[in-house]
Length: 191
Image (cartoon, rainbow, N blue to C red; front, side):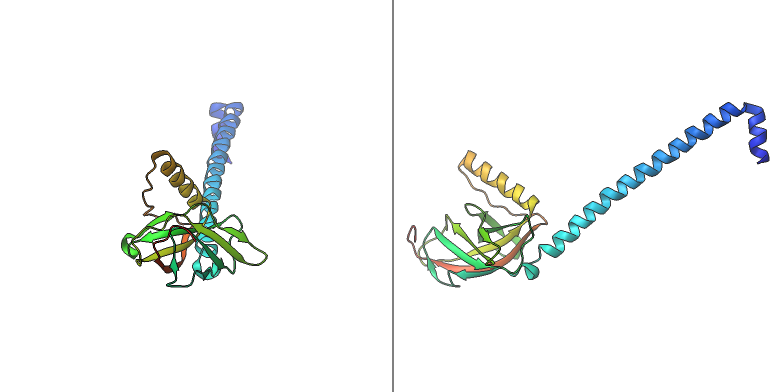
């Protein structure tokens, strides 16, 4: 306390109080800024944990019921399936696929699947299966969160404006491929 008395005698009490208030205000601002940064980081980590847990193929247990594996299908057809659990704001998308794990290419088809949470079923339409007659083709079923939905929305908009549909080669963290399913292209246009 002697140091404060010496400082007060040298500068005067009003100046000392002003310095202490300014210093305290600055420290308070620094602490509040740090707390806000930590809250933002915590929210980011919670969202990342949600993605890695809720958007897992194991947890969702999405299955294709029809067409069966290896069935002949026309260029446009309906895919029906079941699921165990889907995150609340997630969608199911069916994509046609080319390539292997290292360079996989996805083409989202039409619209997101219609989901019936009560019966735990879903259905979606493949609108354009490419290939020659009797080609084995692959479709993938993805569970897609909000970031992935934004990517697909952009993909659809860009495709409609340019009449070219380049593939999606990098999925967002909340896009999880749950099923890889092979069918045979029959050469017909629709079912």
